[in-house]
Length: 408
Image 1 (spheres, rainbow, N blue to C red):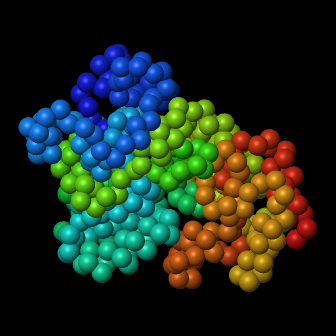
Image 2 (image 1 turned 180 degrees about the horizontal axis):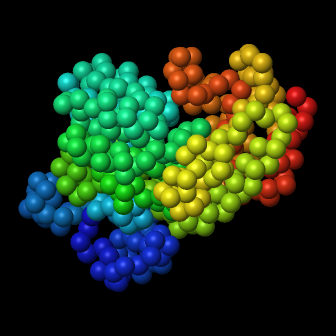
C-alpha cells in the first residue's frame, strides 16, 4: 500500500506531475541507489518477536510478508498516487484483478452497480455475470446518457463504474456529472482511466472516488508485464481494499511493479507523442475511401469531442478505431481480417499502450465473450478494427495499414 509518512520527506511540496513521475518513491537504501531498488523477496526478517507481533497485528509500520507489502511495490503505488492526485494506491496483479478487488471490497449480496455498456468486455462479464451469481445486481446503461445513469440508480446502488474513453470506440463520459449523480445516491464513482492515464486525465480532480488502472497498458508502456492498481482515499485503501487483498492475494510482484515504476517516468512524454501521432493517423483514415467511420475523441467529428478536450488536456489519447465499408456483418468481418492479415510492420496483437503500434479485431477478441446483442448495443461491429498507436514513423504506419485497405 502506498502511504508511508516518511517516504517523501526529502521532496518539497507542490512538485509538478512530470517531476513526481521520476522522483516519487520510497527512500533510498543505505547504498544510495539513484534508480529505485528492486526488492525480490517474499519475506522480511524481523528485529524481534515482539516487533513481529506488532507488525502482524497492524500496530507498527514495517514489512512482514510479500502479500502484505514490498518496498518496490510501495514505490510504484506512491508514484501512481502522486500522478493521480490520490491519497493512496493499491497495486494488483492485473487490471481485472483490480476490478475484482474493488468489487469484493465494496459489494455484498443485494447491492447494486450501474455501469456503462461500452466498457471492456471482461468487465461486463465479471460484474454482469460472475458477481450476479453472488447476489450483486447490476444495470448496464449507455455510456453518454446521463439521464439513463440517473434513472438506473436505486436505494441499493453502491457503485457507479465508468470507463472513459472506452475501449474501443473512445466514447467519453462526463466524469463530474457522474460524480454528482453518485453523491446524490450515496454511492461511489469509480473510473477506469487506462486509455487517458493521469498524463491526460485525473478523474479524482473531477469528483471520482476511485481510479482503476490496468498497468499492463500505458503505465508500463512497452508491453512487458501484467499489472493493475486502484487509487483512492487512505480510508478506502486501508479499511476496504487492504483486508481483502491480504486474504485474496491479488498482489503485484515486485519485478512487475519495478517495470511499471520505471515506465511511469516516461508516461507523460509517451502519451503526448502517441496522442499526436494518433490524431494525424485518424485524420488520414477519415479520408480513406475504404473506411466508413473513424472513432477518435480528438476528431471534431467525434460526438463527445468538446467534452474530451476539456477532460483530457486537449488531447484524444492514442487509440483510434475504424469501420471498414461493408454490406453485411460477414463481409465486414472478412474485410477487417484482410486488413489485419496484410500487416507487415505493425503488430496484430490484442494489447494496447505499447510503443509498438498494435491492431486487433475487437468483435472476436476483447469483446468476443459477449453475445452479439451485447456487442451491437456497445457499437462493436464485425468490420471494426482498433489501432493502438505506438511510436513508429507516421508514414510507415499509413503504408502498412494501406496494404490491406487499398486491396479490399
